[in-house]
Image (cartoon, rainbow, N blue to C red; front, side):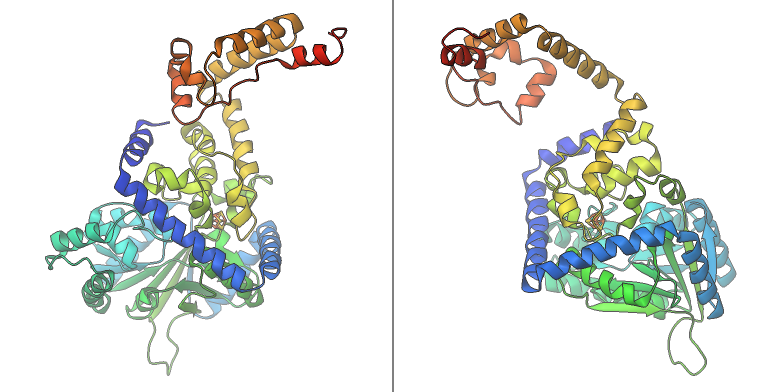
Length: 478
Ligand code: SF4
C-alpha cells in the first residue's frame, strides 16, 4: 500500500464526525433502496437483475459489433464519434476543439469518466475554466477534493461544512439549511450555463440500435449542459453500450432503485444528435468520445470481464462494511468501495494496487445488491491470487507462508498437536471473551496486536476434543 491511502484511512477512522457522516448517508441510501424494492415485486426485481446480467454479458462478448453500430447510427445524425485510447487523447481532442471554437468556459455534468482521466486539471492548465454543475460535484470542486462516492460525491460533508465552504469560496452569508444552500449554488451555476461555450456530460448508457446517449439525473443540470452551449461533448467508456431501447427500460428501473431508491430518476435525457432544422433548442454540434483507457485489457480476461458490467449505481459502496468505515477518499482512484477494489488493480496494475483486493471482509453484501450481478467476491479472490503470484506484498506473504508452514507441520504430528492444544488451554487462565488480550506478553506483538485491536477469539473449551473423545470411548481410543 502506498503511504497516502494508509494515512487517509487512519485519519478517517480517527474522525468521529466524518465517520458519522459517511455511516448515516450510506445508511439512508441502503434504506431507500430496500424500501423501493419491497414496495414493488422483489421477485420481479431479481428477474431484472438476471436479465441485465445477461444483456451485459452478451453486449461485451459482441462489443465490437455494437460499438460500430452505435457509431454508424450517430454519424448518420451528424454526431462526430471520436475513439480515444486514454485520457491524454481525450484532453488533446477537447483542447483542439476549444481552441477552434475560442472557448473559455466549459460546464460539466454527470461524468465519472472525466474524473477518471483528470480532465478538469488538464483544461485548467490550458487556461480554460471547467465548472462542475452537479451540486455534489460542485461542492467537492470548490473544496479542492475529489468525489468520495460514485452517486453522492459530497456524502462525506455535513451541511455545516458546506455552509462554511460557500461562505469562504462564494462570499455569501453562512447558510446551513440545505434547500437554501441549493439555491445559492443554483444562482451561481445559472450564470455559468448561460455563458458556457461547451458542455461536457457523461452517459449512463449508449443505445447502439437507436444511436442514443442516455443521461439520467435528478437536478436538471445535465440537461442544461447538453442543450444550452453551442457545442456538446459526451465522454463515455466503451462499456456503456447496450443493444436496444427495450434493454434500456430494464437498466433504468434497476439504476434508479439501486442508486437512490427511486423508481426512476427525475430526468432521463435521450440524446441523439445536434439540433435539426426547425428545432428551437439543442446544441449545434455534438461529439461522442468513446474512451478505452484500459477497458479492452479488462475485456480480454474472460473471468474478470464482468467488472465492466457496472452501471455505477453505488449500491455496493453503501452496503460495504469497509467502505462505510474508511470512506471514498481512502481509495486511491475515483472509483471506491467494492467496485473500486476490483477495477483499480485491473486498470492500474496488480503490482501497483495489489493491496486493494484485500480491503474486503468478503462478506458478499456487494454481490447480493449489485443490480447487474457482478460476482465481486470471486473477482476479489482472483485478484488476491494474482497478487500473490505477482509477489506483491512480499513481506506479508513471507509471514503468511511461515505461519502456514508451522501450522502444517504441527497438524501432521498428532502428539505435538495434542501438546499444543493442552498448552493453549493451560495458558488461558481467565474466563470469558477477551482471553487473548489477557496474555499480554505473548500476544502484544506487532501484527497480532493490530489484529486484536478489532477482534478476539472465543476462549477454548476446558477440555480438548481428544480428551473428550477418550472419556467417551472409555479411555481406549487415541
Ligand atoms: S458493481 Fe454493481 S453495485 Fe457496485 S456500483 Fe457497479 S453496478 Fe452498482
